[in-house]
Every structure is written in structure tokens, then in C-alpha cells.
Amino acid sequence: ASAEGHISPRIDPGDSQRAEPIEFLNKGHKVCTEAAHLPSVITINKDTKVPNACLFTINKEDHTLGNIIKSQLLKDPQVLFAGYKVPHPLEHKIIIRVQTTPDYSPQEAFTNAITDLISELSLLEERFRVAIKDKQEGIE
Image 1: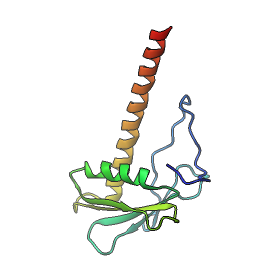
Image 2 (image 1 turned 45 degrees about the horizontal axis):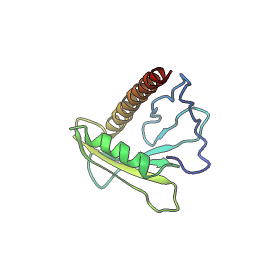
Image 3 (image 1 turned 180 degrees about the horizontal axis):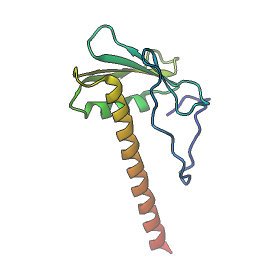
Image 4 (image 1 turned 90 degrees about the vertical axis):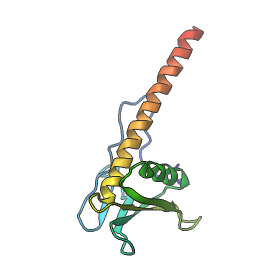
């Protein structure tokens, strides 16, 4: 669920093109983009209040994406805490806070959660396509 004016490319369900998984760049302040020509949509900052934690700020997104990422993060046993907030209703961004065990980085947890979500949603899409095809063949 994107805010109005979101410039990310939309993928036609029939298109075989897929958005690439998130790429983490630069070691200190990390920036993430869907494609090199798009502006940054995710920034990552170390949370100084708690050990082994990061704040992921995702621009132009809302509760829909925040909740699904938080839920996926919480499935990981090495994630000690995952939560998100929308700082203000007029700000089109979410902030996801992730804390992990000492031997597992928050960035790794976030990347794994996104990768797993992409896999789950791709499987759901494929099953949906098969169900529609089966239904259409039954009608004809």
C-alpha cells in the first residue's frame, strides 16, 4: 500500500519481471533501493538505546507493509523484538525497529524477512493463478 504519487514501478501480474530483493549499501548508514535509478526508499540507522538493534525507515509506505514485515520478523526465533510505527498520519513513512540476538544482525533478519515474504507472496500468486485457470477451464 503506497502513498499517492509513489514512483516505484508497478509490475503487471502477467509480467515475468520481478522486483529485486532489497540491496544494502554502504556500511555505516545503509541505504536501500528497489532499482538503481529510483530514489532511496529505506534508510537504516543503528538504534543506540538497545544493543543489536536497528531502525528501518521506509518512505512512502503505511501500516499495510509495516504490519506484514513486523509479522514476518516475529516468526524468526533470533528476533528478540520487532515493531513498527507511523510517526504521524501526515508523514508517509513507517519506522520498523528490530532487535536480534548478538550473533544475528538486524539487517540480516530484515533481509531474510523480506526474502521470505517475496517467496510466500510468489507462491500465493502462483496458487491463485492456478485456481483461476482451473475455474476458467471448468466454465468453458
